[in-house]
Image 1 (cartoon, one colour):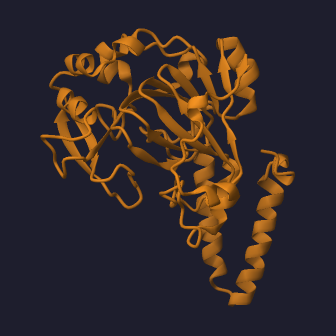
Image 2 (cartoon, rainbow, N blue to C red):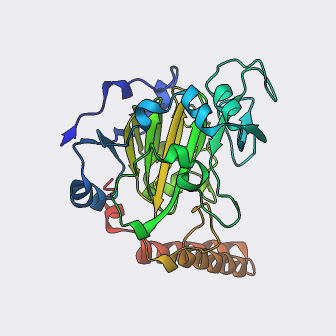
Image 3 (cartoon, one colour):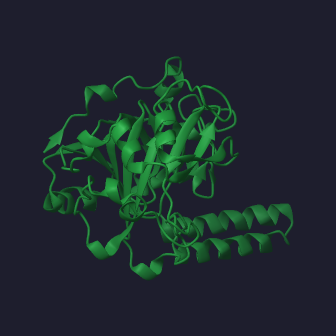
Amino acid sequence: MLNSLSKNAENVTPAGVDGYMELQEKAPVSVFTQVDRDTFLRQIYPERRPAVLRGVCLGPCSNRWTVDYLGQKGGDREVKVHVSTVPQMDFLHKNFVYRTLPFKEFVKRASEKKHSSFFLCEDESYYLRSLGKDIRKEPADLTKQFPDLAEDFHIPQFFEPDQFFSSVFRISSCGLQLWTHYDVMDNLLAQVTGRKRVVLYSPQDALHLYLSGDKSEILDIDTPDLKQFPEFVRAKRYECVLEPGDLLFIPALWFHNTLALQFGVGVNVFWRHLPPDSYDKKDPYGNKDPVAATRALQTLERALHTLDELPADHKDFYGRRMIQLIQKRTYCNSLLGKNK
């Protein structure tokens, strides 16, 4: 059944940005309870919109995954982590460094606000995204990288087993914010411990997000520079706060930005919702565009390069014709009425 958004999700936007927030349309993410496989596949999945699923059994991880327990289970195995002097991590400009730590030491540091041992500064932020054993070939899989912890986590059976792609273990310092990006596969974000704010934008708002590949150039979504990014106010903002034990369904191509309100542990489960040959077989992260989309973008780049042979006024005219053709051939009907 559909519930109203948790009151905890209210007023999570930093103060002093009311003017900007009044300009941008915003909406809560729908929250569902008592969700089983049948409810998910019939009522939620076909809508292709984000949804918070509350009360789904994730196994004993919700109670067990304390800092001490994680450290005990992870032990001295080394993990490669992101370390930054600021909590707002920026993948485009790489304002972080990669460092290696024993897992139990990493968990200890990530759970602290001030560090007695550190790499860059005493209030540095930490972020772990688990990787496969061969990071160039093997997707992350909780059962392989952290088998003892995997026993505590029950993946909801909302998709067929042969559709499974990866299960990504994530741990964030309090206050850590990750850049806005999209993924090419459907996924469930399980927030096992800690609270996390998630802001999402529809794929239909891609033109307002100033993309560089799969990432937005707008690092600060709460106090953006509207002189530099004036179109951003036209992107509709969907927002929720995940409580411990919540699941967030993020459909493929939906942009998302996460902010850890507390030290937290989560697991992302990705699955292939398109035919298997739609995806790049050499993509262990699952973030490369589908093969057909990559070919189309490459063809477009060649076409634009050809337009460079024309005078500026002709280039402008035929560029507009190309935009018109793209709109007619590819835009969903829902875009015509801005039905989001």
